[in-house]
Structure formats: C-alpha cells, structure tokens
Length: 140
Image 1 (cartoon, rainbow, N blue to C red):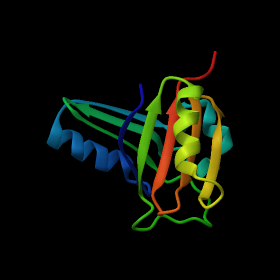
Image 2 (cartoon, rainbow, N blue to C red):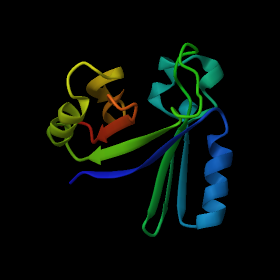
Image 3 (tube, helix red, strand yellow):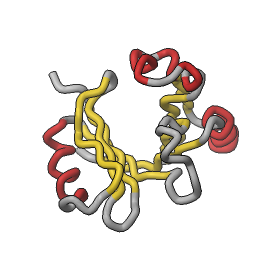
Image 4 (cartoon, rainbow, N blue to C red):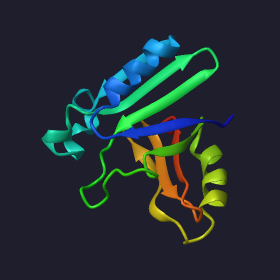
C-alpha cells in the first residue's frame, strides 16, 4: 500500500535540523551518512559526510530528509527543498502512480524509476512545480 510523508532537503545541516525536530517531537530518529553506504562512490568525497537519509517517526508524525546531493548547476533554494515522498512495496505499485503524476513530458529533473542500492527510486517535478520522490523495496 502506498503512503506519503514530507521529504525535506537541507544544504549540509540535515543532521542538525532532524536532531532538533527529534528533540521537539520525540520518537525514533535514524541518521545515515553517505559515507556509510555503497552509494558513496557515486558522489565526490566532499559530500561523504552529508546525510543521505534521515528518518524521524514519532507516533503519527513521520518526516524523511536528506542533505542536498544535486550537482552545483541545481542549487538548493526556497521552493525546491521539499518534496512529497511516495513509498511503496513494489516497482509495479509505484509505476502506476508515477506515470499518472508524470503526465507526459512536461516535467523537469525526471529520473525514471530505477534500481539503486537501497531499492527502486525515481523523481521529478510535475507540471505544477511540485517535486515527487518515489521509493520501493528492491526487486527480487
């Protein structure tokens, strides 16, 4: 079953921000540095200390976040530092919604659904400028 949570993008201070939210909201906080994942080789060494994923769950509140990993040509600025994070169990489940929201070729920063070390991933900004990020478990 698909579900959505807020996804925040920070520019190097994700751990600080998510720790603050954790202190305010309680619950469980998981912080994963890029350097502790097999994905580190995909990025320059100066980004290895950034968080590739942070997840806070406190009762009915759930927030995911990361530090900015995009190329210098796409800088973090107000408006592109949040997304709707759609989480599913399978590629097939995500693909149906992904294709409907993608709505043709009028979106930007499109990354079709593809395998990553942590599972299936895809993203884009839709025709209204809303960023969507999709993740599912790795296909068997």
